[in-house]
Amino acid sequence: MIDPVTLDQSVPVGAFDQARAEKAVRELLIAVGEDPDREGLQETPARVARAYKEIFAGLWQEPEDVLTTTFDLGHDEMVLVKDIEVFSTCEHHLVPFQGVAHVGYIPSTSGKITGLSKLARLVDVYARRPQVQERLTSQVADALMRILEPRGAIVVVECEHMCMSMRGIRKPGAKTITSAVRGQLRDPATRAEAMSLILGR
Ligand SMILES: Nc1nc2c(ncn2[C@@H]2O[C@H](COP(=O)(O)OP(=O)(O)OP(=O)(O)O)[C@@H](O)[C@H]2O)c(=O)[nH]1
Ligand SMILES: [Zn+2]
Image (cartoon, rainbow, N blue to C red; front, side, top):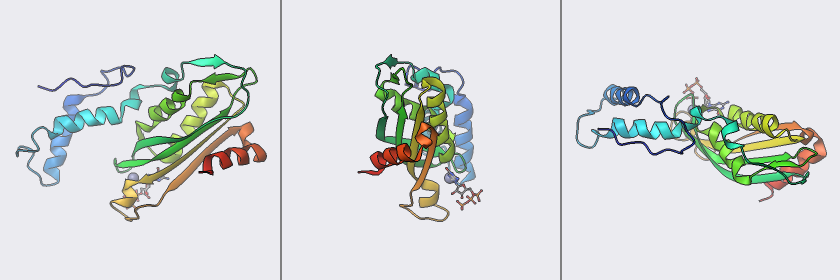
């Protein structure tokens, strides 16, 4: 009997095939030379399947689901949330990449803004999918531009990729930094101001 999976209420369930995921994990254990029936591994396929359901929960979410709360505050200067923790999964090796995201935007002239936590939720929607860092970065920027219609947006992501740390080239500590800059934030002075806020630790 599989335990019910506890998930963020906003994620519609049904698209995830628990039984198939369990079968695949069992097969993988056999493929690497393990005995999936030994004590200690018996519950592992079910556990891993539940973990993947959570790790990839963003596959069943759209940015519109989280960028719901918007206010017209008349604030039309830059809003920036920095050091948002990111846990994502490299789509090449299915191992984690982890770090921080910085998300900023210049609201529309009417001053349409969103709740600060929604920017972090937006990052999660895209991070909880099989990803590459460049796409994660540009998807967050493009969703902001589409939904909030700000005058500009900037997203900077800094991550360490486990596929470069624990295997392959084995260079722990190497950080990959990606950015996506849209609209008025492409203006060199505005971009420099945002970057100094992001990098000024
Ligand atoms: N651009 C980009 N590359 C990534 C990302 N995550 C992992 N990679 C890279 O994807 C590449 C896949 O290369 P392949 O040669 O197909 O795979 P591989 O033989 O496992 O490569 P190595 O990691 O070099 O051992 C590697 O260079 C990874 O470092 C990412 O988010 N963005
Ligand atoms: Zn990888």
